[in-house]
Image 1 (cartoon, rainbow, N blue to C red):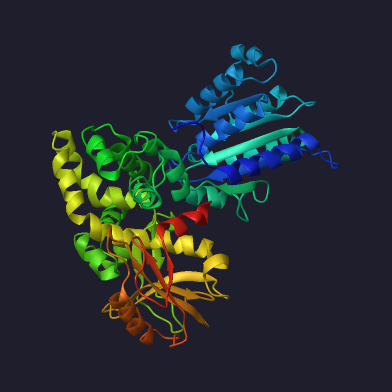
Image 2 (cartoon, rainbow, N blue to C red):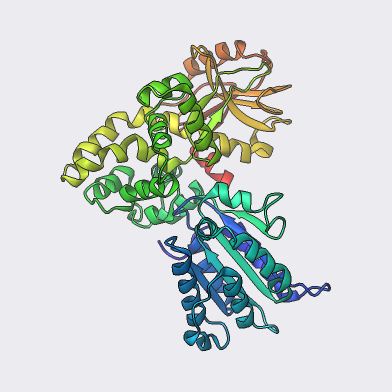
Length: 473
């Protein structure tokens, strides 16, 4: 990878907050805080490191290790002494504070009062779990001291649910910080980073999930199968190890949730089939696991989009990388460790076309939503899909004014994501038939095709991978 790719909006928000700190405040409180959350290995810390490098200001960057409160207090004191804050070296002889209240008070004495500085607390959920008083100590320090100083306080966490809760009503730090969600790198970023054609960039995004650590080991300009052949020969490849580490961190004790997650990763989408694939778990256990998984944004629960209510909920892995890892890589790790990565590669080749056809759907729906003003009929507020219990019909793309029960259907569409097989007249005829079965649609409802290899049918709006990639430009 050459240079730092993407993250323009995220860097822009950090710059804006820093500018506010630098400009000061009439109320005498120039200090600002930001809570940054996102999946593990999505590049949150790397984003902040890039921001610090560009800002060039005195700062301290502390990363909690989650061992114990005493260990993290000692680590914080050591980082403070080694930081670029003025006269930070004087803290090297200080005894380790016995509480976070004392540690944050010590921090306040190290921050300059006449020049801006930056403080970063990474992996903050560890600190919250270790010490029930941490949030209160942070709120007290920010209200009484830090907000009165020209400092930008950056709080980072990978536990998405916990980071969301920190800024909710009733919690000590409520409304004291701006929130920033760091997503994975976009398909457009992947195309730029790897110098890939649009269709190939979408393939790379489905495999890597846009995780920078995996993309960094992808040879510049290499194709999908070249990369996989290389990665599957190394048990230490980021493609292999990132999934297991993410799951171990997210679910250190919830074995049932991991079992349910694996069932969804292997392609089961309905409540009943998920329960069966998870070893016949009791429905109550399946329900609790699904609530946990959706609460942590690991799984998405979706309903058919039409003008009639439906209870046909379907579940899918929300993270593109985990979707691929759970389907192929996780089950194949023992083979890779025995030097038989070729068997895993063969398994991926066998199932790739059908797996990709399903996995690309949420990515295309997001792209269409982003392109709504340019490509979609007026009034399109949401993009989803439609299905029945028997999958007759099953429609890839539905546009509507709202979800899950729409007042108006704005378009119906189909995805054909195959090499060298354009969307043709037969595909169009099938889509027209399905449109007639969709509640809320009629013969005037516009039709849309998204095709990897173009379109030969007439009378239908068509988008190609090149068009979709522009959604993130």
